[in-house]
Length: 161
Image (cartoon, rainbow, N blue to C red; front, top):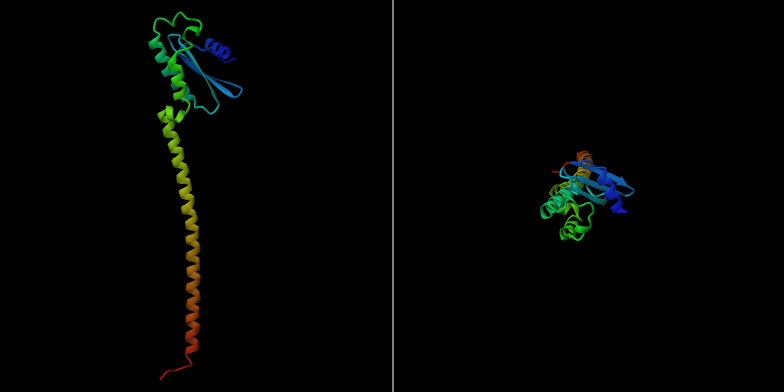
């Protein structure tokens, strides 16, 4: 089924164009270079589009260099199906954050943002607790002043000689 979709999508992609076609729960990222070499990456909906096209570009560059002069007249992929760089590249790009520096930085920023949100929430919570402590301290201060004044009134009738 993927072979059928891949062939159909590559035929409908103009030279030098990149496009993403959604089919059910998957995205097919298609890239046709100006020289006619095409590639398709089928990935789930969560896989970043930019990383898929980086993967395609890199793999197609390696393929074009290794098989220069041999792939141009090829209409089927049968002669290149066992290309070892394909398996290596697929394994390398399984985790987009490891394969792509920008995605790794973006993930790190998201993690940092989450930590900052937790820290800010903690500070705000402590701020509320501090406000409560200040209130309790003010109440205690008022009560001690009241106690002092009442004790002074009580002791004013007694004179110590």
